[in-house]
Length: 350
Image 1 (cartoon, one colour):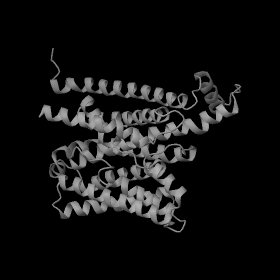
Image 2 (tube, helix red, strand yellow; image 1 turned 120 degrees about the vertical axis):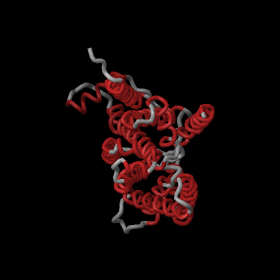
Image 3 (cartoon, helix red, strand yellow; image 1 turned 45 degrees about the vertical axis):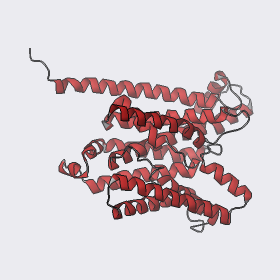
Image 4 (cartoon, helix red, strand yellow; image 1 turned 90 degrees about the vertical axis):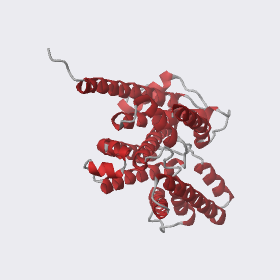
């Protein structure tokens, strides 16, 4: 009897492992969404949540207090769905940027994309840029494109390496953060300034169903684009020249993937503010579990980012009784020590 070669024997195992990761991740995501709806300033029982879902999805007639139904359906559920979409989008953005740039520190926050999106959103909101023709999401998208274009141009002028791109990203982030602060200080009143500063740290309190219709499609679009270019991102692990030698249209792939990252980041920032460390830490953690191949890394990172940000949102409601902590503070409190552990672990391995 002819035995299968080791190369062929690995494919079913890899496919089965990916299926297990995917099913387990989807189950974990559904559980996280359910917990995000149940847990809050006022805990709600599971049977009440189930009754509200049945009433709204299948036109059932279970008796539920109107205030409980409003909290569950109009406040906590859209907030949790946006948190999931935001976490998935930011994690995917980190995966893409780390693959294209071949730098472990690449993420939307570090490369100035988030800062540019924040500046664009604040310019539309406070300064009235666009004369009412631009929405917050459009302003954030334009700001993100301008920020990344500036960072890329500066990095190219400095030599074009990944280290120069990260340094240029740090400079660009500082510049656009300074512009945001200047716009707020110049044109916002005290109440607007307080609200914007809290929003810039990451705030899901004002999220409603219209925001879900923006965040979820943006995350799904980014996931589809990443899945479509899985093999191209694997090829970029050997550098742009090697990817071109393998038949990858380097410039087109870079434009499409960076465009998807910009769209996802701008949409999320316009809805919930700038949230750091998700795009930086989640890809590293998932990579340690699944390996570097993007067929496993992309879907698992999206699920992990979604679950992580839902958990962070739940923690933001519970850390201080009677007060909601900015979700960006929670992600930084978890992400900074987590990234330090990853750095130390990688150094010991090397």
